[in-house]
Length: 144
Ligand SMILES: [Zn+2]
Image 1 (cartoon, rainbow, N blue to C red):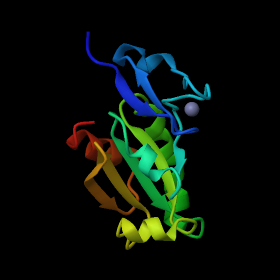
Image 2 (cartoon, rainbow, N blue to C red):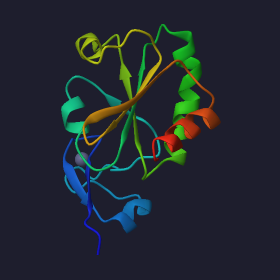
Image 3 (cartoon, rainbow, N blue to C red):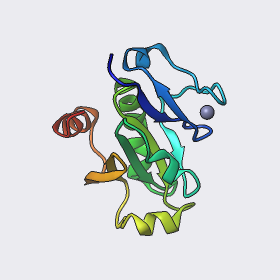
């Protein structure tokens, strides 16, 4: 049997072990009972970033700000992607205004910016919004 996947809970940061075949069954966190693989983006911050980088599923981060028009219009696309990629990739939003230190650390020069992490390491980055088919194609190119 394949080893279970390690997945951090978006709510409490607790690491969950989820068997691959149970990813589609809306698994709940063993600690706080929240959804471990939600079908909507969760919120990243300086506080939970290190914990959320862990685990076996890739993490796609949308760096945005509330004053940014293109960021706001991209938000529904990112939500649709989260629903389509549930169980394959974790999607999270990082508010660059509220997390300026982390944004600087990530070298964010323009928003929206998309950063894909795998095994805690950045593997791809894309600046600017894109339509859903293009976003999914870009991620497919990254093996997602
Ligand atoms: Zn939890």
